[in-house]
Image 1: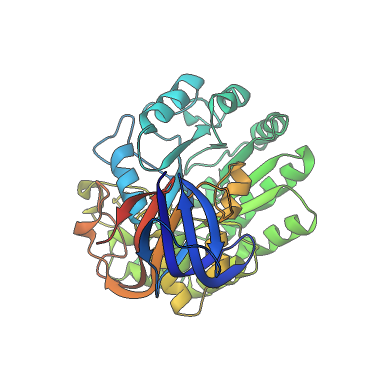
Image 2: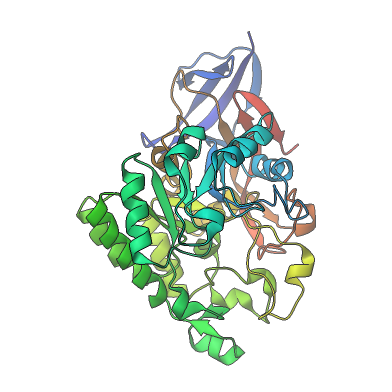
Length: 423
């Protein structure tokens, strides 16, 4: 019997609101006991000054496998994940080929076996992500798909979206749709503002998000379907989301850590590593998103991990590919906002643990006796500087390169086994 005890550690469980000093004992991969009176046995990890929380669940990870392994493989993504405290992640369907049938869902899951993180798969809503030809959502769900997405291009046809929601509702499947109106954002590379105008960048207004959000909320009300408003980035969407929740509709929302930690000024002198989709927006938007995480309006925070080779980034701003790696920086970027007073610690962790677990219907994201010991141990106060060249991801494209961060992962545990240690 293997036994490990974390001693004198700050235990954080967002589901119950627990924030207390104590010990936590793991036996044979499960949490045996925790609290101030917990017995200390087996191997000991001294936790003084550290925190332990449920392992993070990242609901939006793009990899290159299959088809574009030069960007990222499942194995390299897994190494980046454990260095960031992520123990479960959902892989997006925009691979080559697109993950749009049972065989491909099964293939990715098999490729993920033996990796130090749980690899879950999002199936494509339409064949080859063409936006019109519906996939077999029910069969893919039986094969293991945990949600269904359209990638960075939303389902634009309202009738198609209605049919998808109605079909998915019969399986209680979760649909994720990117909140953007392509007719208003086509060919643009920035948020419409005085700042982007001074830079001479083609831009789209934030109302582009609100238009799509209004449509999807209306269709959710019509069909009774479950929908995730994916990657919201503007304050304009929040009233729409709050109205949907007031009606008790099956509507949730996600936001990327990039849009909680950065704003359009971080583009600076045309920094392509800060070119994202959706684009970075104004400081008022960032502050509104932080407040919406704190009050529970926004359900989930994601890394939006999107690896891009240097050749796709080292181009003129308008020509560079959008996207940033984020698995390894997800926790640290959020803890930096906690240190600055913008985020509540338990609200931040809730959006990365029990909230995504509830949406996905998985047994994870909690600290409970008898529960699997998927845990992250971190120092909430450790200062450090991000060096992109040292990231474990195969691609190094991050807007946080050279940025001072507060808070760092010390250990990550999967099934009670220490799979990452900063030392």
